[in-house]
Length: 130
Image 1: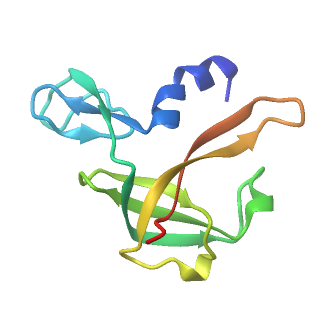
Image 2 (image 1 turned 45 degrees about the horizontal axis):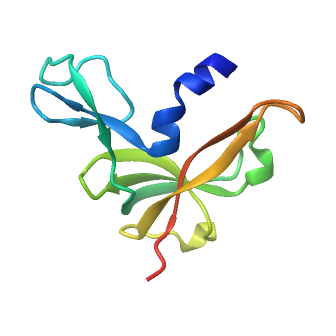
C-alpha cells in the first residue's frame, strides 16, 4: 500500500468510521459510491465498537507477510447497529471462538512494509470480558 493511500484511508481504519446514506439512512462500511436506494450522498457515521461473532474461520495457511500470525481467526461480526464487517479476532485461542460471542473493537498493528517501512495499524476485535 502506498503512503498517500494509507494516510487517505486512515480515518475509517483508525476510528471505525462508516457512512450513512442521506436519502434512506442505510449504514455502510466500508464506503460505497452508491447506496442500494440509489442515493449518492453520504455523511460520516461512527460505528458501534461492540458486536457479536456470526461466523468465523481459522486461517492456518496465511498469505505472504502474515505467516507469523498463524493460526488466526477472521470473523464476520455484526455490530450493535446491525452493520456487518470482517475482522481478525485477537486475544483468544482459535478453538475458543463461538457463534454469538460478544466482541469489542481494539486498535492493533496489522503489518509493516519491511524493517524500515511503514507500520500499518487498524481495527481488530477481541472478546468482551464480562
